[in-house]
Amino acid sequence: MKRVFVVLAAVTLASVGFGSAQTPPAAQSAAPAQPPGPNTWQIDSNHSAANFSVKHMMVSTVRGTLGRVSGTVEYDGTKVESIKADVGIDINGVNTGVQGRDNDLRSANFFDVATYPTATFKSKRAEAAGAGRFRLIGDLTMHGVTKEVTLDVEGPSAPLKTQNGALRIGASATTKINRRDFGLNYNRLVEAAAVVGDDIQVTIDIELTKRPAA
Image (cartoon, rainbow, N blue to C red; front, side):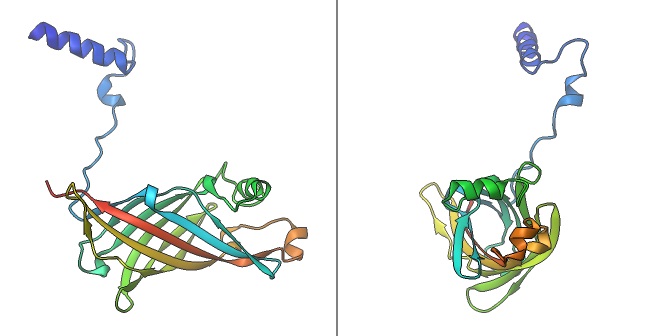
């Protein structure tokens, strides 16, 4: 048994690239991930989306989607005041249905996703706003700028129990931001002609899941 243990230990060290002249494994290994708490809900990225709309030349409305939505929400299942959200949105996935425009939005002309690939929202507090609604106030960080915003939320829905005992709920949040507040400015020629409106309407639809109790 001792010989088997020694062999397994040697194989494990070799597989992670530790040699006799390198830093001991204890100094290299990361802290283990903390298990989710009893009130932690995971965002189901496959059933969640971030959509936006903005005026073009003050005439028509251009609509699009951003990329993958991920993160967690703390919620005790009863009081909306208990809700705390930590959400990330992949800006690389911006899509308006026009490839040239999408490439331009990803470039340094606008979102500059090479430098700022992700937008994040971290809530500070939640306030009830009538039956089935609440406001979620928190910090939105985008394009290297952090501003406080308020999300008007419809939900959360009544929990649905799946076959494996997990719970699912959903909610939809809307807000309006001024792109200039986040340094999202085109060149002077474009801005002088008011090609892109300042106000961007954002809608985030999320589905949350929580593992069954152990």
